[in-house]
Structure formats: C-alpha cells, structure tokens
Image 1 (cartoon, rainbow over the protein chains, first blue to last red):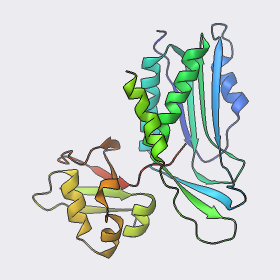
Image 2: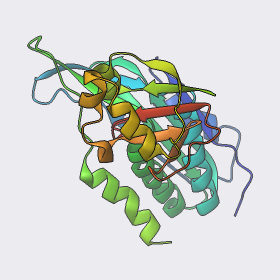
Image 3: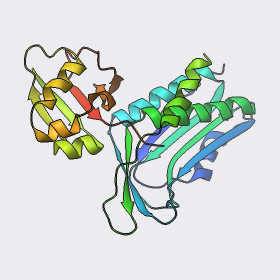
Length: 158
Length: 85
C-alpha cells in the first residue's frame, strides 16, 4: 500500500482535457508504471439524439464520488486517482465522465478504474434526460440492471 | 421540526417542484413511512411515488435504505435510480 493519496474529484459543467488530467498525476514523478484512463462520451443513438441533459445533486455528487474514490484507494495500491463528471447539456461526441488511475503496475490501475466506473454508474447522483433530434420530448434514461450487477460483483470478490 | 425534501429527475417533474420544507406529522419514523405519507398528498405525489420500491433516498446526502429512521434528518432527497457515468 502506498496509502495517503488524495483523489481528485471534480463535478463541472465545462469539458476537460484528458491529456492534461493524466499529466497532472504523472508530472515530476518517476515511480508510476501504469496509467489507465476511461472516458465516457455522449452517443447520438443512430442519429436519434441531439443531446443529453445531465441533472445532478450538488454536494452529494461530489461527496458520493469522493467516498467511492476513497474506497478504491483503500483497495488498490494507487499513486493517483482522478474522477471528473460533467453536468448540464452535453452534445453527442462530447465527454461526460473521466476516470484516471495511476499505479506502479497495471493491474491496480485497471481494476481501480473499472471499480470506480461501476460504482459511479449505480451510486453517483446523476440522471440523464434525452433531447431528441426530431424535436419531440425525450425521456429520462432508464437505469440498467447490468450496471447494478456490475457494481455487485466487486462485493462478491471481497 | 422542519425537514427539507429535495426531488430530482422524474420525481421532481411529477411532484412539480425541486424542493420543499415540510413539518413531518407524528408517527413518520422511517423512509418508508415518509414515502407513504407523501404519496397521499396529491396527484403529483401519487404519480411520482406510485411504485415506492424504485425510489432511491438519501438522508443528509448519503444513500439510505427505506427501513432507515429519519429522526434528525435535515435534508431528505428522493430520486429515481441513477444513470450517470
């Protein structure tokens, strides 16, 4: 365990720069051997969507992601961890979420990034509403059973 | 004691407001009691809380189960299953 690292958690309307976020974790260090980043983007669903509107619970969104990130730091020997989630109106092709995990060896970084995304999808208070390309009223995106199952599997392996 | 209720996504749309301050009547001890009481407050509430089992709840910005006691809660949020990420 390296311990003691403080994850970077940001909830913001504006876009982020993946390369800059990776550099923030690695710059000036020579002990990091692996960096895994995951970016989640807005899809257009074969042209049907013009945007997604992301509603969030200010305060709890930060707190909940920080709790999930702290658990990842407990479970894997990480040297850096960043989670950024956007809110507001996001167009197809734009980024929604970023997770970056850094460690000495690749397994910890891969697993921590995977864990963070699985938990974030089922526990971070965000909701997506569709804006449809034909101008008709879009609905709220429904939660997927598969996402809840994905989060459950980390418990089973404890 | 006044408790702030906050609603998100389709729960907010169906109830018709983002938040409200309520004085909880005596006998409302758990989250499940709260949902039952709210559901009886009008058409919007009835629509939002038609299937109480799917409603997720946070007390003071932390997830809780429906059996959780609500004594001392400053802020209780009701929302659908989350779809971030």
